[in-house]
Structures are given as structure tokens and as C-alpha cells.
Image (tube, rainbow, N blue to C red; front, side):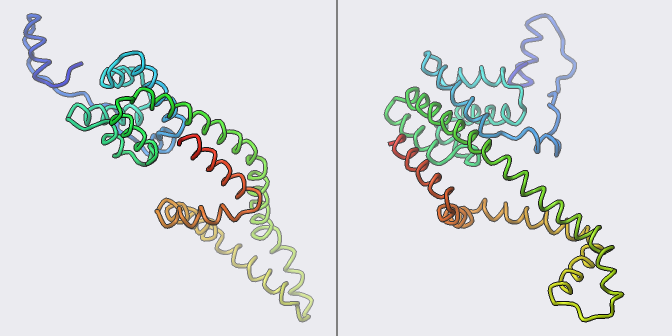
Length: 255
């Protein structure tokens, strides 16, 4: 392993080898499945922050800490991110500037606190506090997800059963009404129309659900979408109170 092909040639010649050709061995390219299942997630950032904080407070330089993490990290997207952060710092950027290129993984608060740590000369202490805060946030999110798993499964199950009933079961039952030759109520007519449409165009219905979910996700990733989502979340009964209290707790702890 070497930083460049010239370094490889120089090393081999010093050891009495005559290199004929030197070429870089590329790691496997990211596939769709890698992007889907090996993304850098919040837990990775928590562990990364804790490890950097421990090594910096133990007396290692930030470069040394990143070099160690590059060798230890097996998750390809995370290692790629660490390598790029390391390269930017070696190129003259500060740690906070290097992190700012990964705002999808590091929040504005995280980057700002790192910047304040660099300015005050207390980066190690700031990183330890950040690691503590992130671990508490991870614990809270884990509890919240655990509490929401059962309701989410129930809701998804309801929609699946409703789709199956409307698309495959109801058409057989509603066919009986057509043979009665009587004026049907408006609600029954609507049900028959919906069922008939779902039966003939159920791939379109499924595709529409997935497309709607994708565009809603993309909208909420935008600044305006996040703001509207937060406003809606704060007005939600029960959960709005939980979110506001947790945000207040986090802000107070950070201050």
C-alpha cells in the first residue's frame, strides 16, 4: 500500500526489485444494494465521533486518529467519507470545513460546535460532549422507534388488507348487486367504481403509492419541506409535546 505509484516504484527499487508496471487496484464500485444497505447512518456517526474523541483526548493528532479509523473501518461508504475528510485536512482545510461537505451526515450544530472547539483550542473536550449528546439522542430515538413499531405495523397491515379486499375480494361480491337491477346508493356506486379501477389498474395504484412516497420524502428533505413538517409535527397531539420537550432538553444541554 502506498500513496502514489511513484512511491511504489521507489520502494521496490530500494528492495532490489525492478517494477515493470504499477497500477492502482480499485475497490469494488458501489452498487445499488450498497447504497441502500450500506449507507452512513446516524449510529455510524455516533460511533465515529466517540472514537475520534477518545483518540484526540488520548494525545493523538486528528490526522493520526483518522488514519487509524481508515484502517479499522470495514463499511465502505463510511471509510470513503473518512478518507475524503482526511484528504481535505491534509490539503489545508480545517476539520469543520471538511465536515461541512457532509451536511447530510453531520448537522449544522455538530459542525458549529467543532468550529468553536477549533477556535477555543478545546476540540477534544467538544468532541467528547458531542459524543455524549449523540449517544443520548440515539438512545431516545431507539426508544421512540420501539414504541412506534407496533402501531406502524398495524397501520401498514390495515392498508394491505384494504387493498386486497378492494382489488380482489370485493369485485366478486359487488357483482351480485349489478344483477339486482335496483338503484344503488351513492356510497355503493363509489365503492364499485373504486374496486373496478383497482382491479384493472392495480399496478398503477401500487406505483402511485410508491411514487407519492418518494416525492413526499424528497419534499421533506428540502428546507421548506422540513419547516412545514416540523410545524405539523409540533401541532400533533401527544407527539408534538414530546418533540418540543426533547428539543428544549437538547438545546439546554448544548448551551
